[in-house]
Image (cartoon, rainbow, N blue to C red):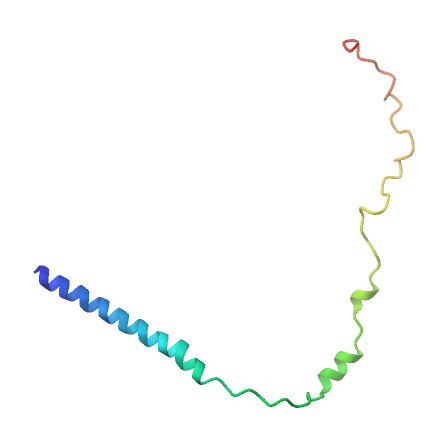
Length: 94
C-alpha cells in the first residue's frame, strides 16, 4: 500500500514538472523567437492627430498661483483682538 502512494506521488511530481517545463517553453522561449522584426527607421507619418497636438496649447500654463499658505489670510493678525490678554494676573504665580 505504501509503495502505491509513493509511486502515485512521484508520478504526480513528474506531471507537475512536465507541465511547468511546457509552460516555461511556451511563454518565455517561444515568445522570444517569434518577436516581430524591428521596423526600419522612417520619417514619422504626419496625420490629423499630430497637427491638432501641435496647435493645442497647454491650459496648465495659464493657471494663477493659488497657494493659501503664502498669502496672509487672517485679517485680524495685526490688530489687538483680545482685550483681556494682559489684564489677568495669576495669584499663584510669583
